[in-house]
Image (cartoon, rainbow, N blue to C red; front, side):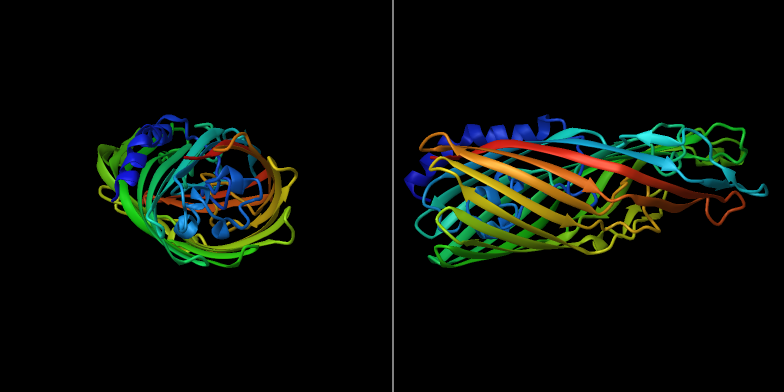
Length: 441
């Protein structure tokens, strides 16, 4: 590594520290703003056009989508931002039943509706690119791609499926890009991802008059994945990009606590170490950008999400079972535009169709997801030779969806108790506000 590169890295150490501390210190109890619990707001610039064309765009702001985005970089640059989520919605009971041994099934009772179970939050992002010679660039991005919290009344109708659910991830992506020619860039990256999770729900006792028991599962851990991408720029006005991110299987080491089981079930009360495993989806992004004039650029992108990898949550001893999720693979589609209003000001707009990977027959209250449409606007203002300020606003409209899931407690024993969940998520909306900037050194 030459002396100029060493000096750049030394000068940027405070910024790298800021990016890492921001990911740990900011409140991450956020609403997912892509399918299921995936957060796609990894770039303020990109969110202004609903992430259309991000796989084909250049600079550190696009590193999450495509590690080839920094190929051909001539100067050190970084991007930073924070996104605030403001979800609203209502989840209500349509006739959930509990079927205990011997007696007939009856309604579960409890509060029949919950307002705004998905919690508000803020998610930061940070990315950096440093050229090493004329053709190679190193990159680093820090983001939170899978994070959300839902919180319900502990005595509500949904309590046997969910009371509190929290997932926090922090992804550190180290990238390298190589540009063998001005029109071709290749990139690869290692993703080191931290996950911290909490799940809690009620457990039924055998007699209807007894209070519910409680299960609480916590865990955390670091795991590895990878990314790769390519960009083609056949002319100054046309660019294509393909990016791939691998699935990551997380092993979470933590504790499980079961308390409040009475009578014949009391032996199942426990407070001990355990493990849990789940797998995030792989994703394949294909995008394009085309300038039809000096002031107007059109963008398009489609993403295939491998959500079928999130098939179960595997629970270790003493639970020793798998919680089925049955997610399905889906495509998202986005189009957008960048319009240069002046030498300093660029405005953006975009729209995205983002189907849910959850199924009507197995969707639970932990992730009350539905098909969604994103309507976005954004702008960038060049405040000086080195600094550009970015802002974006998105309105997400969710389609009403069924909450339908069968839960089998103490399965295969004489105490087996079944809960047949029947509910609906309706009126769900989200306002998503992003602010940030880009800096060139």
